[in-house]
Length: 329
Ligand code: PHE
Image (tube, rainbow, N blue to C red; front, top):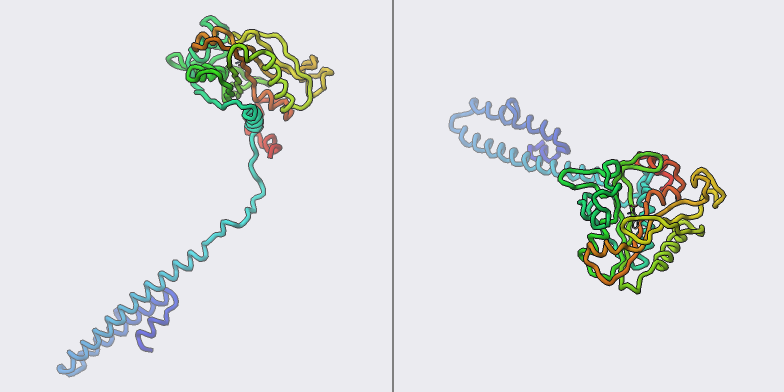
């Protein structure tokens, strides 16, 4: 076969390599031809050599070109074979679930956004002014004790509630305002109903003194609890917070025994779900607000989520318990 046709006939790189050795190798076609030169007449040798050199160069060019073509074809074939169809449906049967805490948080935030509250956030690492002082919690207050608060160096601390976001918002914004602030808070606590990190949603409404009353507070929280838990009785019980006056804790009729008395409600028929009150004048003084009135509330998201989804042990929420989480898929 003609050398060039032979090169052309190669269909793989290894075939081509075999042909290259056959033609250009040490014992190959051209080597044998050149060896024959010594048998020729001296006069004939130059023409023979020139012809042979030309044929050899042509064979080399053809092999190089063929090699490139075969390599390209090989890459193209590989790309073709490795192609994947990203539009194909997944065959993996499991999907993620929204964590019950996020789920409850989203639902609560959604309710208050619908009521025209603005979403606010604040830092998790706070200072004593925003977390305590401005909230009318003076230096000797028991809530500042080491057993409750995680202190860090230079008087920094992990916020123990979302109430400092009230202070940060009022110090940078003029009244009137309506805000909620969801986020993580930290306390040195760990048992069936407490984890050192948990989540709260803070609410604050401030307006002209004659425009915000305890009745407004009572109405919005009763309506929220109905939207979140369904139709259970709600009661406001007098309580105390340094940053609200008057203050109340809010209970709903036990959703487990419907008020008859059970283990979860400790036989009282009621479940405590949040704290609230009218903003204490000392708080307004600390942020420089005058002639205003306001109400504030703070609710624990884990508390609401464990009740609504009937989760017995709060700690299970943070142990990556798949049996628990998969129920929310
Ligand atoms: N900050 C309070 C707590 O963590 C909750 C609260 C907020 C109470 C706002 C009244 C008003 O317990």
